[in-house]
Length: 280
Image 1 (cartoon, helix red, strand yellow):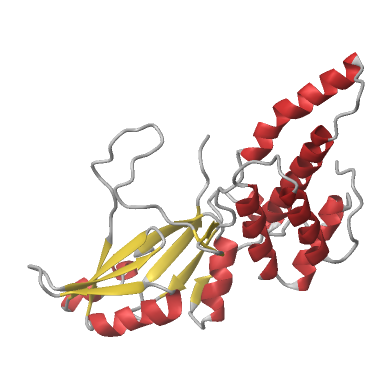
Image 2 (tube, one colour):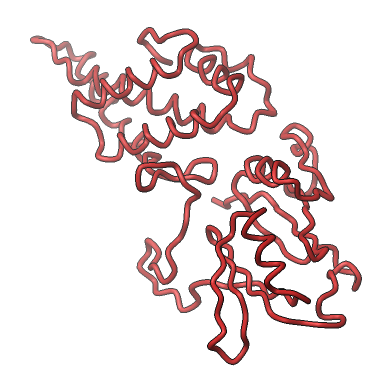
């Protein structure tokens, strides 16, 4: 529960308050990074979604549709605001403290770490990097937190195409992939990269270039996505054919499968984008 008074309908003023609070000092090293990530994500939302964030701040979260896909963003904003209020409370040290006040301050101090653990972590599939919110990426060859060396660092799907250049242009223009043309290897190919996804395009003919569904296999590829809502909006906005639409969050709760949608690429392949649910 927030204690300070915040503007009713102006998210820009809220972030100005956050910035002033961080400038006072005493916060975690990644607090500013957290603010910038939230600020960039809110800047890309429609006015209605931003207003939902303001409703969260003023204790009206119950009025927001449960189907909203950006509720995690509002929750992270509340986490930051509550954290900053606690830091400001601890910074104001009265001359005398009762035992109850000492206990309260101790509890608040111990609770800060719970807020801080989210700072700088990806949100809605994005992280703050080089001054902007960008899709989060994992570095190839990077050791995990437990220090175990990964012998298998990454993988790539292989698509056989009648015209690999035509397919590469589609994935670059419509899906935001970056193409690397490699013709100095035993098998000339084009490598497509975006986020943690890699696809290798090779020249093919005959049955090799037909979609998998012609052989009784429903999809040609699965892409696991933390926030399929955002990717669905991007893909549908680029005029790509959606063969299976994304169910809303409420409908998905009653489904026995992951929340997902399916799109068709230029060669007729059906790519399933399925929500990634991290096991804990």
